[in-house]
Length: 196
Image 1: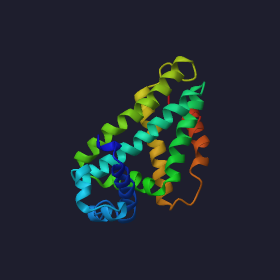
Image 2 (image 1 turned 120 degrees about the vertical axis):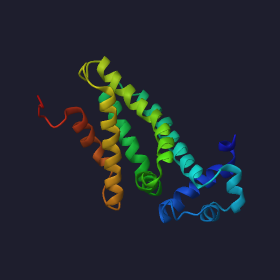
Image 3 (image 1 turned 180 degrees about the vertical axis):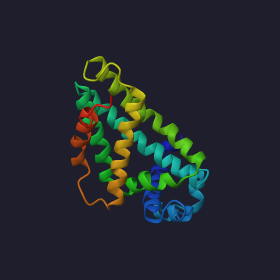
Image 4 (image 1 turned 60 degrees about the vertical axis):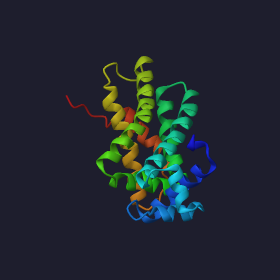
């Protein structure tokens, strides 16, 4: 399988740097090849085109997110702890790799509809993890039994996503991970009002 070949990871890592520095549309395959230290033709042994590279970057990096998340969440006893570790983990990975943050938060947004559909397919697994945490919280009485899990899942992911985007747009001037407890408190407690 191509993913296990050493040059595959080299190209993925190079693509993150090149796309972050040049933008997706200006990130030529030749620049990615140069950054990876491989011949242009080598790229096509692993990827069909630049779009395939971008999707593969997202798939590989989300795979890391999901693998790490499953491990760290498993050791926590409450849904709130699981949620906090998930948000911290999400923010930590992106704050450690600022090029990846730029690619996921800005460059993926500029892609075409077909590409976004493929990105959403990759996201499904991550959203399912959030859903499991919410269901766990409902079962153990931490969350209301009438909690709309699908809506809450979208709200949680959307909040994390927008927080990282704002951090990237502000040139990463503050500690992203430090925001995690405040965000989780908002998610758990809401704004204290009542709509009805």
